[in-house]
Image 1 (tube, rainbow, N blue to C red):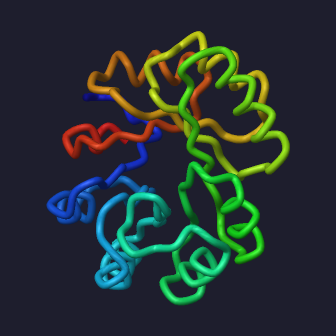
Image 2 (cartoon, rainbow, N blue to C red):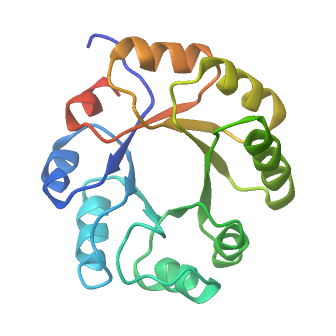
Length: 182
């Protein structure tokens, strides 16, 4: 791919770590590992110049309360969290780290509920799943003030371009072959 895009690496498997360390991607949404190896993973990523956002619901052994978020910030020095739980957004703010609210839009009611929640809890960024919905990307972008990340099921450069043209600020992708697009 010839163009550069704002790609966020979604690392979902341990074997992707070596690839993301070698990539030019500067942001990583970490969705693998566990409390026992998290410190090592975060240190490696930071040494490689990457920002690390830990997905609370995907990394093993983490609680989902304010104490877990504070521990991630203090002990592991993560840059932020990714979560589907709105109560963790306030905990991230309290801990002095960034937050990404991940939302899943399946119908109009889910969209309306997500917008109310986003406007109420004020995450730093919002991640819309799945990311292959140009009309919904446009609508959501017009209803929130946060940067919008889209991800899920994106496989081709034309889908990246379409999402960006629809208003997405970043594209979250789990395929290491797509990380070079950044």
